[in-house]
Length: 136
Image (cartoon, rainbow, N blue to C red; front, side, top):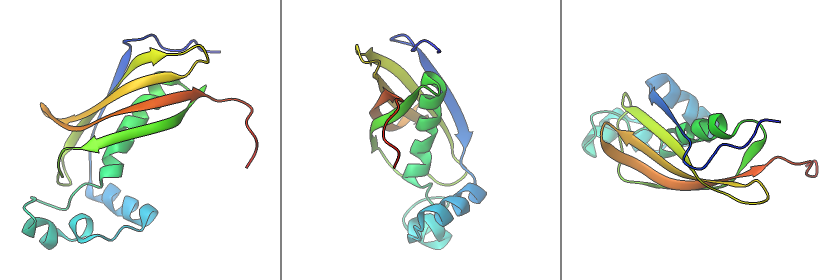
């Protein structure tokens, strides 16, 4: 079994959000909101292109959590706030940092995703150890 990461340990993951991924997320989520799927509506709202789905952007944080904690942990709690919309084609740098570890092995992490120096997403997550829970 891999040991839990130490307090202060962090991992960063960056990705440019593409039109192809936007289309895939539309298919997965069923979200056909004009800001996300209609360039004209997005431009009318002041963006250079369609807005990146906020949950797709925050999924970069889940990549960090998975890489940080490994397969022995799962997301038990995930809370994020979004500062503003960003257009498709934007590169987002996500980071998760271990800020706590309890006796049961649950990790607490601080989350941040930035576009350049500007913070786009802030939040927290708790990662619980995977145990032999009930099959659903």
